[in-house]
Image 1 (tube, helix red, strand yellow):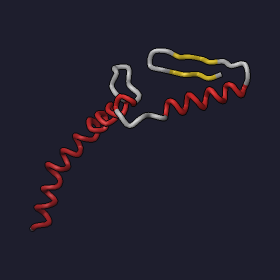
Image 2 (cartoon, helix red, strand yellow):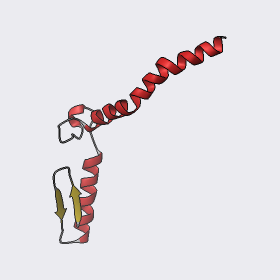
Image 3 (cartoon, helix red, strand yellow):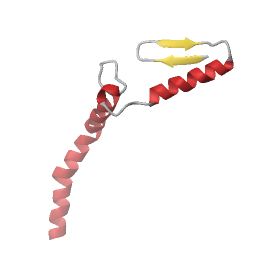
Image 4 (cartoon, rainbow, N blue to C red):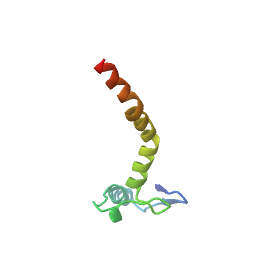
Length: 84
């Protein structure tokens, strides 16, 4: 049996032979991982945003505030300290 979980539903696939199950797993895994180079070839979220774009936005949101603080406040203080 193969279980495919998405945001809104789950799909269970049962094949007649174990070899069919293995082949379906291989094809599904390859399709899920193999994305093209263009944004229109990428997997999309439920809001139809490419996953790679959403991950970048989340990273910047999570780490960008720290980076901004570091560049604006910490680095100038270190620069001043080394000049003295």
